[in-house]
Image (cartoon, rainbow, N blue to C red; front, side, top):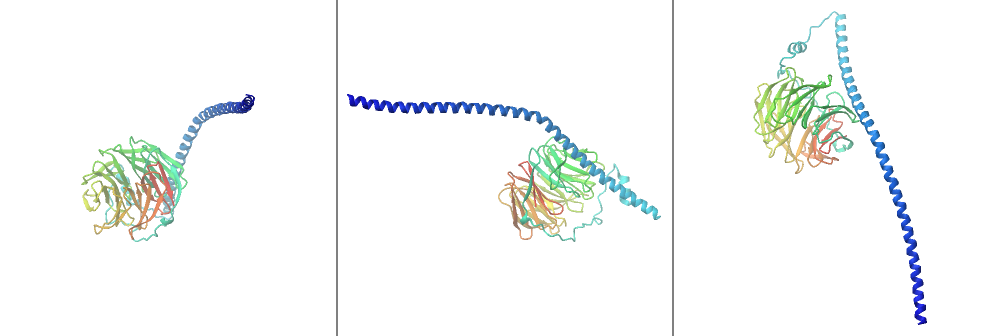
Length: 437
């Protein structure tokens, strides 16, 4: 009994020691829990104070952003006014010089035409007078193999559907499914101007050859002409009955074309502000249109799998190119005007010889649709905006891919070389446009 009692005492002492350790650990964890709760309450209070502080700054930030946009618009308007005044000063100086020499020149024919036809119909230039200055020029192809992503800009709240470069200044226009268009400086990407007015997604954009106007097309079935000098929409063309996909200015600036889901392409007069011609012949949506450089011919690509060339004077189809096995999404022409590039929903790019009315070759960009193509100045490189988030550049001579530009997070909707081939700009469904050089 004594041995059992001593044994139980030892067990009791051991249990008491274990209990003391548990009690110490319990007290420690209880204090630690209280400290964590206190820190949590403190952090919660700090977050509440920071949130209130942020809310107090938000109106100021919005006000500053609005002031910045107004300042950038005023800056752009001042630049346009400066260029306009500079041209007027040069004209006055030339007149003064001619007066001093005693040779007062008569008004030019073009000036007379402009004065007489103001508000009236414009005239397309005769075919024999239109000379393509790029017909005999050779340009070196850009080194697209070494192009890399330089900058990415979150430009819109929705997909960027089209881009266009200013003909004279380092300025880029973008349009989006968020119903707006914006103008950016290149390569810095500073917002210069923005415009609202369409009631649905904006699909196409192009600059006037003189850079004084902008044209946009939209899913609201309208084509809008924007005047930079007045900073407003100068006119809205409403003859299309369904969504309008694309638009392009004539090299004279007196005409523009637009193509629509209503199976037609229309020729608009920017002087008389009316529809001068309607091109009918496609049996499906006309998805893209462009001018043959320095001619009166219009090229269109349609969902009926054909590419057509039209005479804007008669409204008749001159040539039709067959070969696509799926809807044609986009068409463009090289500077010489002798080659057409078209892409379709099967991921195929085709090249067409305008003079021979024949297919020059076909290039595959993979199983995904290609949404846009664009020639460089040399005509030996074609950039393609692919639905798999990649911009592919093809060699038109060897008919192969020479560069793949990866970086977009969603389908690439548009792509354009700048006028000097120094950089490439692409717009995507990830709401960004990216500059590659």
